[in-house]
Length: 85
Image (cartoon, rainbow, N blue to C red; front, side):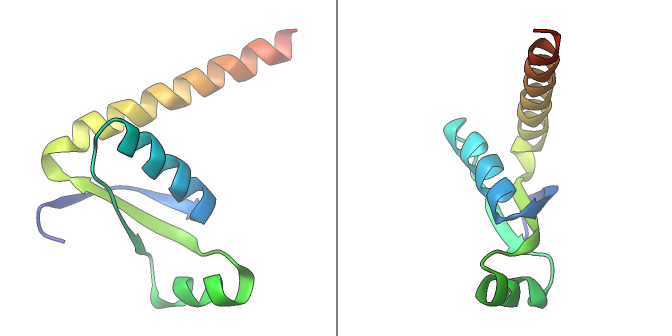
């Protein structure tokens, strides 16, 4: 995929949907690609695929990484806050 850079590999369709939704809300275009040909078959057999590669435009890769890092930090802070209460 020329002009696109690998951002991450999502564990399943749910994680991929969350990541793509977050990036889309920030106006970052995304593309998903199954990691291998068997992943698509898993959707038919098991209802979801595993190991989905997520790509963004090369020029938006730093912004996408920063957005995901910020989301992870926020999630960790909320988890820690909930554990203390």
